[in-house]
Image (cartoon, rainbow, N blue to C red; front, side):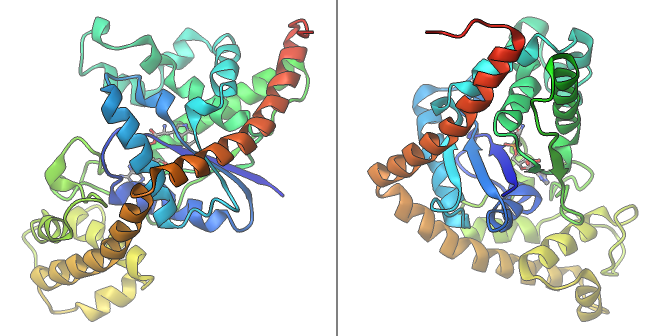
Amino acid sequence: RPRVLSGIQPTADSFHLGNYLGALREWVTLQREFDAFYCVVDLHAITVAQDPAELRRRTRVSAAQLLALGIDPDRSALFVQSHVPEHAQLSWVLECLTGFGEAGRMTQFKDKSTRQDADHVSVGLFTYPILQAADILVYQANAVPVGEDQRQHLELTRNLAQRFNARFGSTFTLPEPKIPQETAKIFDLQDPTAKMSKSVPAGVVELMEDPKRSAKKIRSAVTDNEREIRYDPEAKAGVSNLLVIYSALTGRAVSELEAEYAGRGYGDLKKDLGEVVVEFVTPFQDQVRGYLDDPAELDKILGKGAEKARSVAAETLRSVYDRIGFLPSM
Ligand code: TYM
């Protein structure tokens, strides 16, 4: 069966609606047709300052959320990145094939690093995309479900795979990004021209927050001065974002929603979408709590996932080391 891999950072106490609609929803669907590897990328999380107790908690909360969203540990290997040392080992090899300038052109690094002076930006943040390439290539993944913001990292991954294959012989599968059509980029509710991301709380719907708070954030979403409920991302970014979220969570077409809300006010749309979100997150949160109530069972699931992941990753690493010219260890 073809393989799929994706990862998510445990850098917050909750995933947000952008993570879910841009990527995680697709993770759940793809596990039916693919041999799936899904990881909580704790190595990536330490590229910025992290508190150890917090990281430990957030890693478990992340795994619990993935299970509650429908990742089935009997089908998919659900694991923690640091449990599979081959990611870091392959990353080193790929770093040695990456140009310094090439890594410097990664826009996420540029965005994150220009906010701070050079000595507060870690070298790990710089090499972050190369570790991501290793995550993908070590499983020979065919498909990688991610949101739009990961497109450039996927291009780098493909370039590195091609470069390795050209230099040392065909070794890596070239992975295809799977970026959803409508929900590739969910926007911030307070600034609908910016991506929804954890840095701006009022504009971010967190899956684990009090559902009433989510509904309130949606009611306060920034829209425009017209009255028409119409999908037009250029002229009406806020309303269009709400329609996309509504459509994705209910499975109803945007055009159908436009017809239903014709002649009605933004208040109606926001109130109804708030209810849709509450109905989605309430049972989800109950499930997450269930998994968190039994950390031993959760750790067992992650242990089993890591074991499966390691068997595949070790095989790739062996062949990489051999092709590079490292002596076999006896
Ligand atoms: P991360 O942890 O920031 O986000 C996880 C996933 O959520 C998607 N996403 C969004 N999609 C739509 N709209 C948004 N506003 C939005 N915000 C986030 C992201 O595109 C991502 O798919 N570098 C990755 C983690 C990673 C990874 C990997 C992914 C590490 N190794 C290997 C794929 C394969 C990241 O920081 O995602």
